[in-house]
Amino acid sequence: MTTLADRWGIHPSQSWLHGRQPEHPVSFDEEHGTWDVYGYAEAVEILGDHKRFSSDFSTVFPGMADESQSAGNILQMDPPDHRKLRTLVSHAFTPKMVADLEPRIAELTGELLDNVAGRDEFDLVTELAYPLPVIVIAELLGVPGSDRELFRKWADLLFTDPEPLSLNDEDGEQMRRFEKQQEELQPMLDYLHAHAAERRRHPREDLLSKLVQAEVDGEQLTDLQVVNFANILLLAGHITTTMLLGNTVLCLDGNPDQAERVRADRRLVPSAIEESLRLLSPFAQVARVTTIEVELGGRKIPPNQVLMVWLSAANHDVRQFDRPDVFDPARDPNPHLAFGRGVHFCLGAPLARLEGRIAMNVLLDRFPTLRTDPANPPSFMVAPSTLGVRHLPLRT
Ligand code: HEM
Image (cartoon, rainbow, N blue to C red; front, side, top):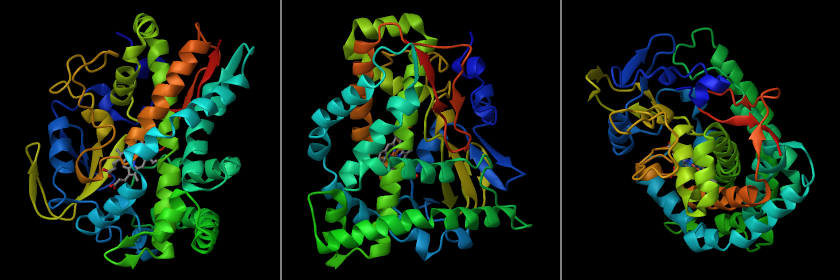
């Protein structure tokens, strides 16, 4: 069987593609001084236990996790601080608020696809999969969607480094790359600072206004916390969804029989999206730090070790998923880990799912014969933490 990975050469760096995980659910990466976790059960154990597996990297990467980056960075917090910030944001980001976005998402999808009407070919990412989620998250936050080229530039800065995180940085090369990246990203923080300051003066009905007004234990968030949090929402909130839309189209394209099935029965669209998330998990890897000695996958791991939890690999674990390389749009149950698990479970999952469902339905409605072009193949993101298309040329 030719998998999508074989066909398009997706991420050769990801050793999980070679089916290692059943024999080696956990292994030490000598070169980078980190541990790779490929197994599903092991990933679930890690994500479900923040006491032994922390998200706070300040002890292992002191220079990369100082106050300026960690304040308000929900992804790098453990309970109880994490819970406080999460509760606050959950209030500002309710299921109703997401559900209310449905008409706007449908309208935007329609407008974006109007631009390609009558064309023989178009790049799905440029025309739909990038602009749709970025405009939605920008409008939600309350920053102009028309600034999206800026957001793309900043997201690119974050996700174009093909090097994995390493604890072996004796020559300081990784630190220099990190500092350079921070310097280049400063304009983004200044941009969000300016918008947050404006909302403190003139609140509106947007998420940024809610964040500047919100209180945790009687205290308002500082500007730094608001800006770092808004930054996560802005960046995490669009690039991943861009990949989800592109990857789902790629899955359907690579499985014409299944695509026909989904076209014929649109009730399968949501489960097809879940299956795409499992098969090609956009947020391929999350990291944790051991707080004490742990035993995992038959290995003893000392405290203060960095674990790279490959969600993309866990989602292919044969011990958990029957025929894991097969795209089955009706797979049920499908307990994939593409949105994580436990206290850090993706806050934006309902929004990503809604955007996916609407966009896929409109695409299927408008293009009965959408397909990839062997002469013009897709390209992929290169950062090891990502798994998904960067460009996806399609023929109509
Ligand atoms: C957390 C994946 C879309 C906001 C996460 C995590 C994953 C993930 C794996 C857990 C990280 C960890 O455990 O360390 C994805 C994927 C998406 C997506 C695959 C799209 C297909 C979104 C969107 C938003 C968003 C649209 C915002 C609107 C967040 C936030 C967190 C998070 C704020 C941190 C939650 C916490 O730490 O409590 N996401 N995400 N994500 N995601 Fe998403």
